[in-house]
Length: 118
Image (cartoon, rainbow, N blue to C red; front, side, top):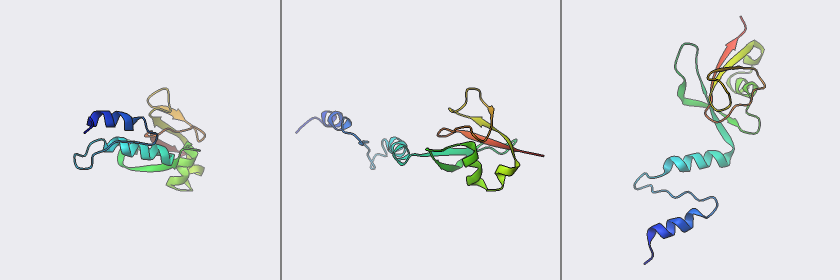
C-alpha cells in the first residue's frame, strides 16, 4: 500500500487536477476558483451609493471583454446613456477607489459603483 501523500504529490503534477474531499469539505473553494478560471468568467460586485457592496449577487462577465461598459450593459441597456463615471475597488485599479470610464477593464471580484449624469 502506497503512501497517500505520495499519491497526492503525483496527482498534483497532473494538469487540470484539483484534489478535493466532499466528505470532509476539503479544498472545495479551490475547485470553485479553478472552475471560474476555466470558464473564463469573472464576478463583478455592485455597490449602491452609501451602502456596502452586495457580495451575494455578482454580475457575471466573460473575461475577454470585461469593461465597465459591458458591466453597464449587463445591468440594463439604458445605463450607458446615463453613465457619467464609475468608482472601482479591486485589482484592476491602482487606487482604492478609482474613478474610471466605460472602457476601463475590470478584473475578477472588482466592486463597481456607477455614477449617473444628473
